[in-house]
Image (cartoon, rainbow, N blue to C red; front, side, top):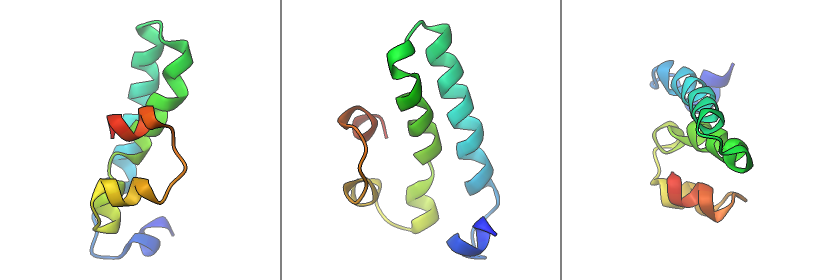
Length: 75
């Protein structure tokens, strides 16, 4: 279903990779004792392929979203 939203010409990895990255980023934040930023790190991983999914520059995509400045800088 999600792949139909981003187009059939896109590989499934564009959906699975950010999910794995989000979990990894969150876990790394916990291991590094960064509890205040774990949610932001999860978002960074989750958004990491959004530009490829939408065929738009990351700056443009993030400019249309309500995310913290920390997340914008890390993406």
